[in-house]
Length: 466
Image 1: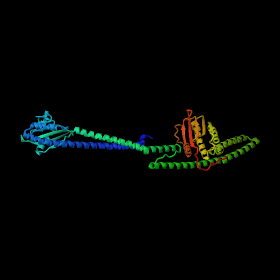
Image 2: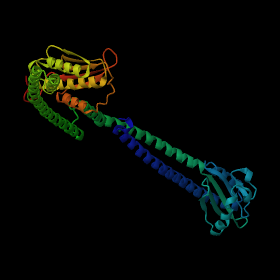
Image 3: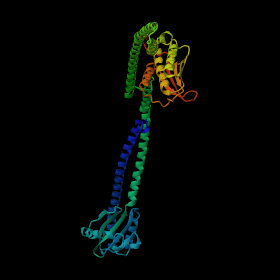
Image 4: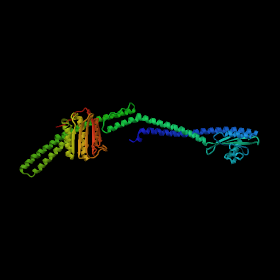
C-alpha cells in the first residue's frame, strides 16, 4: 500500500491543509484589521496634530510670532509618518514648512497641490478634513485657521506616508501567522504520533494478520485493545476462526467424497474391468484352440484391459491412498512418486524422516494432499528433471518441502484453484507455506510448508481400503 494512500498520511495532511487554509484566511483578516487599526491611529494623530497646529498658527499669526510657527512644525515633524507639513496664508502662499525648500512658494508648486480642491470647501465650512488618497499610500489632512493680520483664512496641510505603517502591520501579522503555522505543524506532528500509537500501528498489525490468513497461515489475532478498533479486530478474528472451522469441515466432507469415489472406482470399476479381462482371456484361449484369426485381437483386448485396470487402480489409490493409515506417509509418497514417474516421465525422490509415522490421520491426509498438489503442479508446469518431496520432524513442528529444478515460482501469484486449496489446508492445520529459492542457488523453486506438531482437529478417522 502506498504511503500517501494511508490514513496515517491523509488525516494529518487534511488537518494541515484545513489549518493552513484557516491560517491563510486569518492572516488576510489579521492584516486587514491591523492595517485599519494602524491607519486609524495615524488618522487620529493627523486630526489631533492638525487641530493643534491650526489653533497655534491662528494665535501665532495674530501675535506675529512667525519663528515660533517654524518651531511648532519642527516638533510635528518628529512623527515618523509625517512626510510634509505646510502652513499657508489666505493666498495659498507657503509661509512655513517642515522642509525649507518649499517655504515661500505657492501651494501649486509643492507636492501637496492635489489638495487644492479641498481648500475652498474647508475655508467655507471652517472644518478640518482628513482623508486617504486614492493610491492608498498617503493620508492628507487640511485644517483652516483665521489669519488675523490679513483677515483671511490660512491652511495647515499635513501629508502622512502610510507605506511604513502598512508594512509594519503586515510584518507583525506575518510574524503571528508564522508562529501559528509552527504551532499547527507541531499539532499535526502530535496527531501523527497519536495516530501511529493508537491507530496506524494496530491497523498494520491487523493488516499483517489478514495477509497471513490470505497466505494460508493461521496466526493469532493481535492484541488491539478494548476500543472500536479492538472490537473490529476481534470480530475479524472470530470470522477467520469460523472460516477455518468451516473449511476444515468442507475438507473433511471432500475427503470423505474422495474416499467414496476411490472405493467405488476400486471396488466396482476395477473389479468389472478385471472380470471383463478374465472373460476376454478365456475367450482368447478358446479362439486360440480353434485356430481362429481373432485370437490375436482377443489378446490385444486383454492386454488393453489389463493396462486400463492398472490406470484405474492408480486413480483409485490417488483418490484414497490405502497405505496412508496402515503404512504411513512414506509409503503413500512412494506410490505418489511412482504415479508421477509413470504419468509425466519425471524422477520423483522421497525422503521421510523418522518420527512422522505417529501423526494423526487428519494431519496425514492434509500433508499428503498438499504434497500431491505441489508435486503434481511441479511435474506438469515446472518442466524440470526431478521433483523431491521431503518430510521432516522438527522441534517446532512438521516441515514438508517440495523442490524442483524447473521453472522459478518465486514470483508465482498463487491465483489458481489448486494453490488456493493448498492454502486452505495449510490454514486448517494452523501452519504456513512459502515459496523460496533453492538452497543450492540453482534454477527451480523450493516450497516449504510448516505446521505445528500438535495441529489436529477432532474428526472421525479417514476410512481407507486395502
